[in-house]
Image 1 (cartoon, one colour):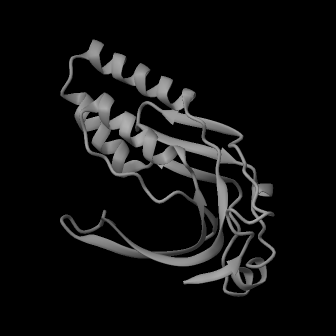
Image 2: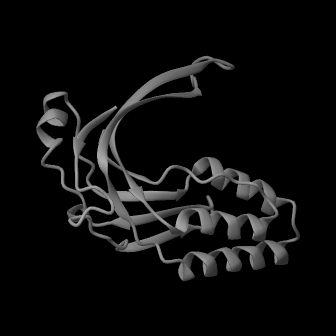
Amino acid sequence: MPIGQAPQPGHKDAKSFSPDSKSFNVKNNTLLLHVDKGSFDLSGIRETAQQKGFDEKEKFHITILGFKNGGEIKKILKKLPPEEQQRKLVEIQALVDSTDWGFVPEEDIYHISKEYKTPDPKNKGAEISETRESYIQKVQMQAMQDFYKKLNGILGSNLEPPPPHVTLYT
């Protein structure tokens, strides 16, 4: 459910931003775009988030390839000979570098909750459930769909892009 508001995309005040940097981790096959906190207006949500005990994220990023898709890429690459794995990673890096990662923050800020399950180190075969909450702001990013289409072409896969967003508070 939307909480706060920022300028609407397409609205005369909506501004396009570019990431400060990109980091493609070849070990985990993850890709984060590091973005300037100044790209986001937190004035409409700061007080609410702080009153509810949320902490502002120290650094902001947009996840392009998270652990789930990174793990799938790892499985695909593992089936290939080492030299072909390396060639695919070079192709992916070139795709990352040649993509225009410009984005526009969307209007609404959302309060989300997600349950995570992790193995219980004290009880083999059991899981620990943890609910994590955050405030996020979606972004419009024209490149996301095209990037995934080209990535799937490189890998012969059918990976789905995540909804582009920035986590503001946790």
